[in-house]
Length: 238
Ligand SMILES: Nc1ncnc2c1ncn2[C@@H]1O[C@H](COP(=O)(O)OP(=O)(O)OP(=O)(O)O)[C@@H](O)[C@H]1O
Ligand SMILES: [Mg+2]
Image (cartoon, rainbow, N blue to C red; front, side, top):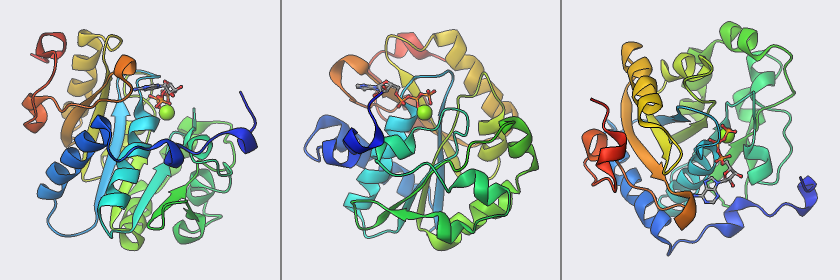
C-alpha cells in the first residue's frame, strides 16, 4: 500500500458527469423524500467484506455535499477495517474510538475535506477489542450529536454477517443502505443480511448495486427503493 502522502483523495476522482454520480443524486433525492425535514443519518453496510461500503459512503457523502448546501459529515464507524481516512487522505486519528472513550467531542473530531460543506470523522486511535468498545459506546448520544452539528450524516460500517456493529449502530440511525457487489455478493448471503436487519427492526432504505467492472454504476433494487434493478433474478430476497 502506498503511503498516505501519495494516495490520491477520492474527492479528486469523483466525476459529477458520471453514471454513478447521476445514480447517487437519484438515491439522495429518494432519501430526502423519506426525511421529515430534520437532519438525516444513513448507515452504509453490506453482507460481507469488500463489497464497496466505504467507496459508496464516500461517494454518497460527496454527492450530497456537491448537490446541496447541507452540512454533510462522513463518519468512519468501521473500526475493524477503517478506510475513510485513506480515501480522503487524512489522518486516521483522532476519531470515532476517541469519541466513544469520551476523550473527544464530536465537533472537534470533524475535519475539513477538499469539499467545503463535507467534513470527515476518521476511525480514531486503533482499539484492541473493537466489539467491547462498540458495546460500551453510547451510540444514541453520539448519533444525536452528529445530527445536531450536521444536516446529513453518512456512516460507513463493517458488514452485517460477520459482526454485530452495524446492527448496534443501525438501531440509532434513520435508515440503512445495503451495498451489493455485482457478480460477488451471493443471493443467500444478501437475503440473510437483510433478514438480520429486519429482525432487529432496523429501517432498510434500500440496496445499491456496486458493479466493479463498470466502475461504480449504482442501481436501487425496486423492491426496496423504486428503482429498476439490473438483475433481479440474482438478488430476490424471497
Ligand atoms: N465499483 C468499483 N470500481 C472499482 N473499484 C472498486 C469498486 N468497488 C470497490 N472497489 C474496490 O474494492 C475494494 C473494496 O472497496 P471498499 O473499501 O469500498 O469496500 P468495503 O465494503 O468498504 O470493504 P471492507 O469490508 O473491507 O470495509 C477497494 O479497493 C475499492 O477501491
Ligand atoms: Mg470499508
